Amino acid sequence: MDTTKTIITMSSITYAMKAKDYLNGLGYWCEVERTRKNIGSGCGYSIIIKDDPDLIAPLLERRHIPYKGIYRL
Image 1 (cartoon, rainbow, N blue to C red):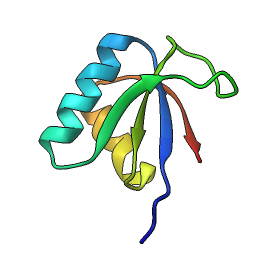
Image 2: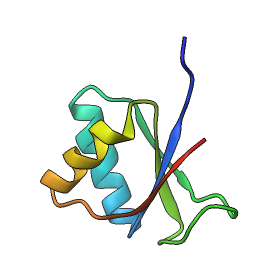
Image 3: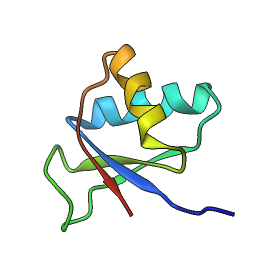
Image 4: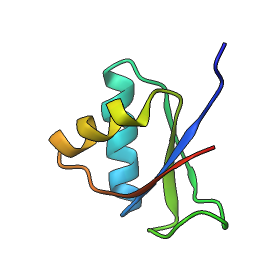
């Protein structure tokens, strides 16, 4: 079982919460957490996903939910 997670840094806590609600509603696992100190910049909040970020990023873009960066763990 692949347990790889990806951090997507967000532009605001509001967008992080919208992304979580949207992705969870589509059946994807997503959580919000404080951005780790050694990862990128942004508002200080990120979403954590288990699915392929190449699949998730376009979903966020189509929903006009901006993000700052994608970091695979």
